[in-house]
Image 1 (cartoon, rainbow, N blue to C red):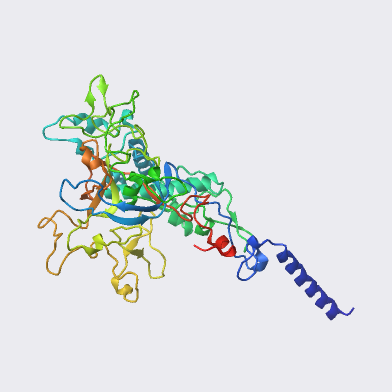
Image 2 (tube, rainbow, N blue to C red):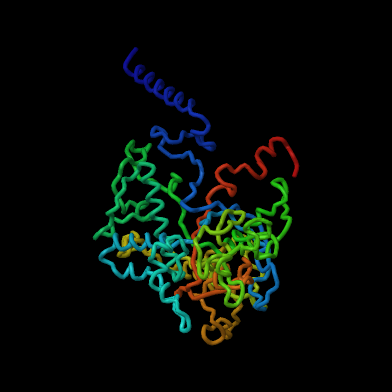
Length: 503
């Protein structure tokens, strides 16, 4: 055999070996469109990862989404008409089973003081306002001194935190949880002293994904293209979505927990509507046992009656109570009525005859408060970071939206909110106390009467101000199927098509 023929046969044999190796790959290892092999350097190295589903973050509960009548379910005794019932659908999401506690928030403050010792203003800016306890004609000074710091109140809901501070806490919590996920999976080693004196050494999810944070690497993921290690990417499905405040629709849906009144798993039927996060219209436990007559939530029963009589204390809370005290609702969430009112993401607007967008709002995940932003870039197109190592976001310019069809304004907080030309119905301090900084708070507190415990009621407060009756809990978007990682519900349309069934 001459040399050219030998080379030719070696080439053919090599091709056959490659094709043979590729044919051994299962359909899961190959593209269903091109037949090319995934995760193989010989075939380009395009990665397809086995995904077992979204991990449930600490303290979170899966809230399976669905349709419900959002709005008041009882008489509007205030005659504000600010939550007219309408049917909406909420996508599945996760929510904290309890309010954020004092010890949770102190952990956050401790981290800020340890990691950013040169930025004292960062710590001071995050401090809750303990002076919210003061009243001109009440002796609440002990709460000013003890409620946030004393270990007796460790598991009580943090109060005096404004809307802006609550959002900053969500950002911090996202980074700490994602960092712990990478540590637990053996990718990073713990670095408790990170960032001290050097903000580029602080883990944030964005800085890690873009390579600005290197950290103390234990073992990176294998890269099929280079054969070397690489950092985790979004496509790996390891990092969780951001913690955030729930939208008003999400909060109300989670509080009602109508899943507990479904007639059967086979039917799309709710047997009874709810006024409160429990069945019936009573505020007290009715079964004939030792709990009979106790309040079902921590609220103000009557003028001057916050917790009942000595020797027979009812909710046992003249102010707040521990976050897991009492009965959870059918989603497993505690204190969705009573204890503290809670911040939501939404900007507040009352519904009026002039407000078509609220009466006929988006019926999938309704939300008012969008301000669409983009990353701020330098002259080289690189993302700019601030003094804390976070990427700087700027409001998207409306001039860039002229060709878009789905949205035309980057600040949608007051979009179609009932204002008529030359007449501002929400002129703050003149016509109303409503402006673009007014945020919806939901749920009654320890200082409220029973009416405000209905999830359909709504109030507002300026996002820059805290209150002794307002706390918060975090939420997280559910990615993937709505029923959790098993996702066995619903119609399998692919199977239905093969069996030629009609629906």
